[in-house]
Length: 208
Image (cartoon, rainbow, N blue to C red):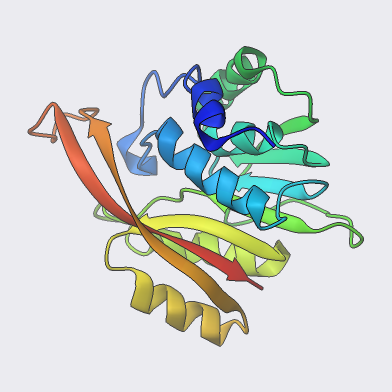
């Protein structure tokens, strides 16, 4: 298994959003966070030979990270055509050998039929629901995850643990791991008043 540092270096070539859409809360997942999440999932046996879904895949950072760790298949689900085009280009840049499919669809209404004989692992950095009119967006993503996944890893806004714990308990799942993550985001939208800001987040591993 390659090191986490090596995985981060491979993911450093992944391009972000050219024209990010505020309505979709399109923020890039940094390579260091993606590498940490994928490396952890791989150590737990949740990547190799599994079907990996990257829901709200954006330009493909998490799915491509997983594709470098010997999954059976990676499927990225994304609503935005521009992001999917960039994800396709990023797959060529990364050069992963695992089969990768990009599907234009709403990740909260999955049009997928998955095999019953293979573990399904979801990796996702869903919208946090921080924008007006998009509140609780991460809840809809978790509802999709609960319907298809054996295990999931997801990034949420700081302060989400109580909500996630409650949702998982109601869905009959088990929240096995939770940790904090801090990463920098460059200015993307007009309402941002800083060129770069630090974002505090929380990451959860859930068995469904």
